[in-house]
Amino acid sequence: MRLTVIGTGYLGAVHAACMADIGHDVLGVDTDTTKIAALAQGQAPFFEPGLPEVLTRNNRGGRLRFTTSLQEAADFADVHFVCVGTPQRADSLAADLTHVEAVVDALAGLLTRDSLLVGKSTVPVGTTRALARRLAVRLRPGVKAEIAWNPEFLREGFAVQDTFRPDRLVVGVTSPEADRVLREVYAPILAAGTAYVSTDPATAELVKVAANSFLATKISFINAMAEVCDATGADVVTLADAMGHDARIGRRFLSAGLGFGGGCLPKDIRAFLARAEELKVGEAVSFLRQIDEINHRQRRRTVDAACQLLGGTFDGQRVAVLGATFKPDSDDVRDSPALAVAAEIADRGADVVVHDPKGLDNARAVLPGPAYCADATEACRDADVVLHLTEWSHYRDLDPAALADVVRAPRILDARNALDPALWRAAGWHLRALGRPASVPQPGTSDARRVTIPQRGAPESAAPAAGSPLSRAPK
Ligand code: UGA
Image (tube, rainbow, N blue to C red; front, side, top):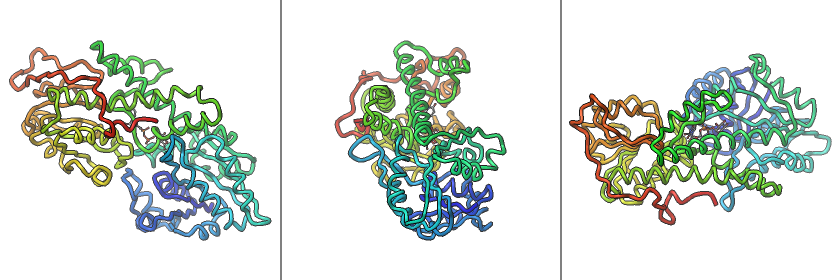
């Protein structure tokens, strides 16, 4: 089939490449000429494992091309995927639909044959119906077009694999014909046994925001438990493991720590709150406000814990930050909890050095203040404390004994609960983790290099200064 994919950001670039790979003729469209030029060369404009290979394979195979011309897109195919961004509006919690509306408006006037538009962006419930009205009044006489919604559930870092082997495909359609076309588009994926849910557009739109809200709720739930653990000496990792054995609960997305960030979960729960209020059902999802607040509190708790490790002040202290991206295996720093913490600590007088395996350029662009270092060990040189803020596997592979030799004081805060505390403590580190018991000397380990951590009583609940990076909490 001939398909276009309009918007070649994270979602669109992966979708275009993967649709070509399953056998379609695909034209990717974007207004960003630099991005289009890179994609046409087989280069992904962001780090995503496996994507350059799929791009190159299909560019060379002639099934994948890119353009900046929407007219060319209208002429090329009858099925158009809309994958443009729906960021949070600057003036409210709501989603900004400007880009989606602009694409629908512009494409409507260019279509000369009956067509199907398929939205994949994350949108507030009711958007498809509103867009169908915009579409209808802009079509040329005699041209018919329908709009369906087909939300995307891919995770950054696993985007290619999630597109080829999704947990489910969800389509919101208003006609059997649209359903037939979408089954044909996804035929190879459906043939592999993927669940297919065909429903109305409102339900399809809601599946996406409800799923992301549920994931955010799981994370904030376990982070709330981590706070209780810190107050009682209990261990949140064991707690999550034990809860996760219950198949009704499951262990995934129960990793306590610095909380969620990125371009999706934070803005999606806020947009859902805003939309629910418009629909006069704000009370039904008001708990999401607390989910957002718990999430932001983890950033403050991390800064407080780091301050305590340093004896109550960041002034003049050297802080090594391991991780800048919002999650590992991505170079995305949008709403990154790690960078928010780095920014706050720098604001409070520390000399901050940040390392990240893939996100340094993006981090430097949004947060120019700290020093950036491409080598994790060098980033830790002479550090008074090391903060493990994004759980790249690279950091689990560091040798704690060797790292202890380069720092000024072997203190580490594992804000992702991903390091092995016994290993680090055995190498002489004072390790603090969120929601886990504090370091206790283990029988049989050498105390020779163990440092005494001065506790000058940094208050756990210290509020961030107004205007600090951490105070950008939900409105
Ligand atoms: C998320 C969803 O997982 C995807 O299904 C969805 O398609 C996507 O948003 C989207 O809406 O486009 P993604 O933003 O790539 O995917 O990231 P996640 O893997 O969901 O992680 C989000 C954040 O939660 C990260 O900052 C991660 O570190 C954090 N997290 C995740 C935790 O703090 N604890 C956990 O147990 C899991």
